[in-house]
Length: 467
Image 1 (cartoon, rainbow, N blue to C red):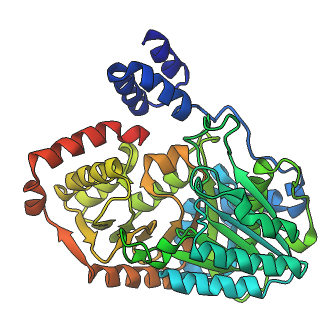
Image 2 (cartoon, helix red, strand yellow):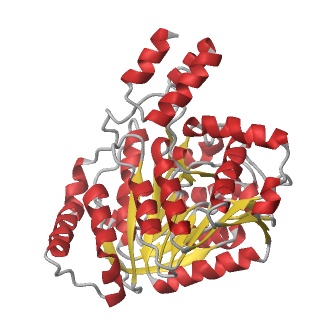
Image 3 (cartoon, rainbow, N blue to C red):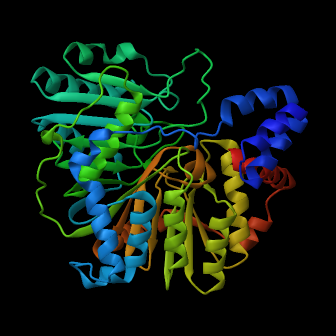
């Protein structure tokens, strides 16, 4: 027990997760220590993602130039309204090297059929390369449909690369892609087990969802690949999620992220710099955005800081949709202060759990916010998986990061932070449409929960820092 406690302290975790682990070690010392070895490693000491040829993109220099222009208050914003968020843009540039681009066209998908129909169309139209990365890739109907489309393109000479997470896609077998690799496609697994069935990096998963086609089209958001995302799973029913299709300079930053993730996973098939991966974008849009990434290998919780900055800067309204609402103290305080400041805070969560402890922790936290004026809505039309925040109908973020500790500290995530009133309004309209399929969780209703539910909430909340 003393050895286990010493290891936890030496890892220098934050106080909340340290106490959560000590609680586990106290009540289940032997099993708890094994769990800690599997789930509690600190990756901040490692520099996982390196791509020496990144310098050829000139992104780093462009970031330096943008920082300088913002410091000198001489940044040439195309839309005057964006000037209001210059400090927000500056923060992402300084902490994450997130290039700000203003020439993007963005399509929003809130339905799986729409998203995957368009994705398959783009795959079928690919001419040079297709890069695909998902946390979950199922070997079911949708998974086979996408795989078969990739096989066809590989046989046509298109470079195809597929990257999936070892834990998220744990039921997927490599033989599923046998015909694709035979056709010349490449498949890699992120953080696979080196000592099967033991995986010492079990707790650190690549939760990003990315597709880049010909360097011109990029996809990111919440959908994975599987029949449930088409609403075909009886347990969950309709699957409500949000995904973005992006065209413009932001696609180059998605591409760079994919290459770094791929090269970390690859043993023999590293991607070197190829101009075809970064063609001159078709500048058909005017949406300003930054692509921000985060992970347990970094000291700074980049996406979480973005969430807090958005919430703290709100003047009128905050809309949050998330399947898991397990904020740490800083995020919870930011939302609470917004509520107490008279901001219209609306949070939407699902009506059913896909992870039981996470669900009860979520109800505990939203119950606390009801008391300070937040309006909580429970989505009743299936499962809500969207990760979205919209502030003041002006700025928004969509991506893979949930509103929880795991996304902040343990998972590798990616989010688009969007500075565009039209996109923010589209997302607000989608939220309001979802309200028609939701029920409000009032303070009176919340107080009526049983003692058994209160007990489950208390236990789940104690464990929330390590869920």
